[in-house]
Length: 452
Image (cartoon, rainbow, N blue to C red; front, side, top):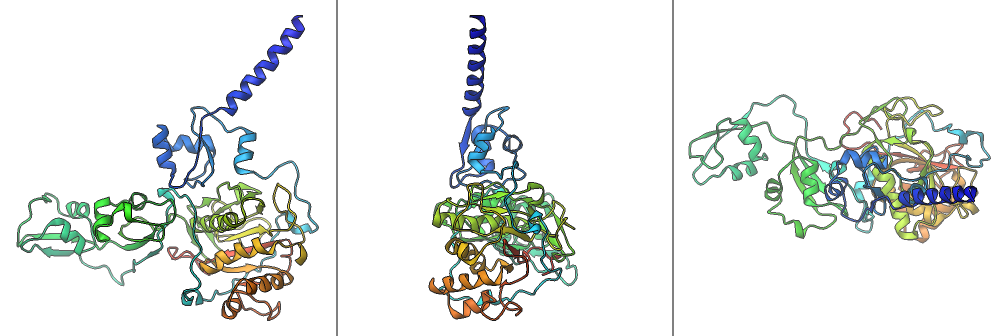
């Protein structure tokens, strides 16, 4: 009798503990959410959210499950369900010895053609569906031009009818900067003939709103006031903005915190961003999945493009990007500045753990999904080079042609059918890429020390 009672109590204890774990408070990330907004709503800190959910930065994804309870830890089952991490118990079956991480990418870098700027109206950018946090939002381009020599501080003589807000607007600065440059200045009491120090010009950049962005996100990311933001953009109203809207901002905050330095085979990486979990891919080794902020965003956006068209029915594997600080990465000749990534091919038959790194025949390639992934990078001008086996290029070429790619586009994008040794096209052949593709992204425009 006592033995039976003890067994019952043990079963009850196990049931209660699993129930508590399963009922740990959490939220599902929705469109428009940001880590800071979720933290504010849950009355917790951003640091707590990062710790509970094992986040390395602030990137979150639509549909991602975030633990928000105190002392809560994601269970293995819920984590697997939310992010589908790569299993550790068994490595993918391969037919090549170099699947262990050896990358035969050449130690030299090809120059990328700049013809993407001449794309016609029929080549509209693919829609982006990322939910991005204000802390990780990146401007579309920058107007900052390095001066040949340090200029003297600018001064302005107040005219009749002037206000400090109008002076700030005309001279690409903020009221806060004017007050800082002029101790004792009263913003509400300026008079004609008064001289105001305008300080150094503030660099200008353009922030392009994506889905999930807000005007407040742009202001928060670049440390400017919402009133200044509205004045720079013709009294922009928050309720009127839509994805694709470009907003002009004057700020000294860096466009992107991460920086790719040097070439991919002799470079390093600063302020790296780890590729976050995503239900469209698995990551072999998170410690080797660091890249620039742009690299991680472009990978996720392309996976989103595939998933939005074909749902999350197939998962690819992300093997290596870069080390946290860049530099030489074991088994690789490149992957040194956060711009390279090895990704398995979409295949017709893939296990739930992800399409493996194994020899892929042309008949095995899921050409529809694969072309959707590649086309996203090509149309957005994000890929400098993509190494794909020449035999697979043939199938991709024919599919892209059927889907409406023009002759000029195909000639610019693909090496095929010129021959596997012709140095033409963004997609090119290189030996030992029968089991995975290698994408090298362009230098982010904000990374002045990056070398193609």
